[in-house]
Length: 214
Ligand code: AMP
Image (cartoon, rainbow, N blue to C red; front, side):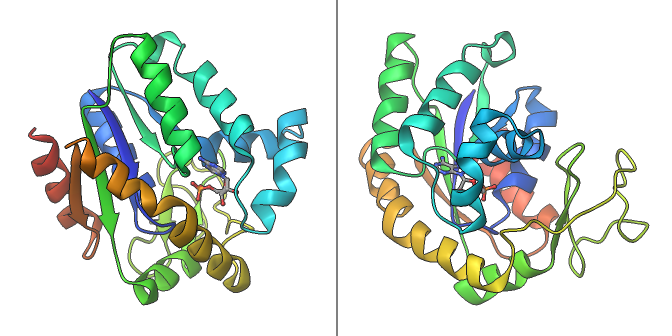
């Protein structure tokens, strides 16, 4: 099962990808998570990516395409994967098609999560995440049992540096101009399902499992 989760920042792709990944026992591959870990560890990749991420811009295509090319070669991806936050531009989508074509395999389904801008801003501003295990919470809609502590691993929850009002606006603009056109790209290939991203994570998860037919 090879899946892509598309949609604007804050729509809940990561939360849903995490749940489905546990159910199907296939990895969630998130370029955002990989880049944040690199920033945290101050690796050369992290140092290159940080200024783009902090200002809400996209990291250059060749960098993220290289990350995905290496990640998808790992053995845990051989039975499938959920791409969360990649591809985000037309060149990334074309590179992915070329990569998967080389292995005689394509994408089974692309889930496009949809939500109004007002709701996205509410979700992004209240989002908290665990830097240890990448679990995602919301102060109002999906709070951790103990404030600021991850239910899963006990890590201290943080607010992402790019979840600040000005950067959120920038990220939504970038999504509109660069990522939205991919919906058409995958629609034309006949693999796109639209997912209403409104409601609580449980309700959205039912729509997700319906869409992937499991
Ligand atoms: P995310 O966690 O998916 O919202 O990603 C956080 C940030 O990482 C984005 O705002 C970008 O700066 C960068 N990033 C993540 N995925 C990509 C990608 N596929 N292409 C370019 N930049 C990305």
